[in-house]
Image 1 (tube, helix red, strand yellow):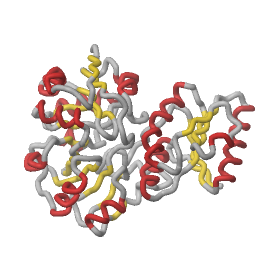
Image 2 (image 1 turned 135 degrees about the vertical axis):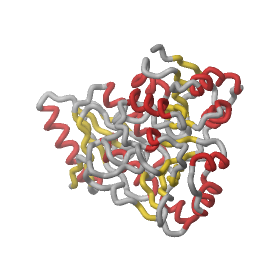
Image 3 (image 1 turned 60 degrees about the vertical axis):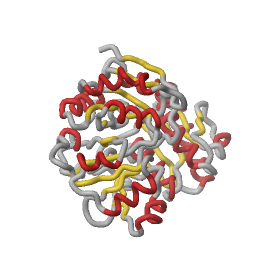
Length: 351
């Protein structure tokens, strides 16, 4: 398969520029496109064969649910069996935007899209290209991140091409995305609203709207549970991972720096290729040839936006061992640590 690459300017484009992408989706094909979070790999959410193509292209386990992307609230009538008042409140505050909500699904939504579950994850993206693609195609778009399963999510079209060239029909290149972390996922299908995946919309922001909000204990668990039933993407499998072995070092900054420098020397003396993921505040404290700053702790948004790009760079420089600082487990730091723990396969050293 030859993958079509098409550049589109998110700030200034005509709907006619999306005609080929729309035709591909309508015929059951796959199109990668930018959202405000990461690039998504889109197919017709209501067509089981399109969902099967998504799983095959990514090498994604079929029990890992897909998120259905919509362009307006009326779409919920076709997708969700019921829409609680909490969902309406959240939609008023955060849609369009980086929030996914889980509902009991209608029969029309194939289980190949929902990972075999009776619930469906739904999001209304704010990116202008994503919204126009949904609207112009007339298709509700199932779209996980547009990467090989387990790899760092793509924040640029070249990341998509690196992983999926020749495996999907088209890539819409809308430049680098803004947020860089996948959407927050909230389960509204039973009882108290529960965060299943942290993201740009924080727990505090959700509580301001709803009051009580639970956090699934698996979010910042220090180990992977292979027996979990994944109600949302990213709950069960290793994700976001570079090819090298990544280890997170937790503790006071000075002790973290000392431990990472010790580990770097140990592996370098063994002849291994080693890299460090640091911050602007600490990048000069490491005795390592490959130190990469993921951003400043003063602006967590910069760290979120740069994380996946840095993880992919680890592969480009051939890092066999990667040592990374940890981040605070509140506000956006919770989302950052959730991704890093999975990227490191829960390898954590506390000092």
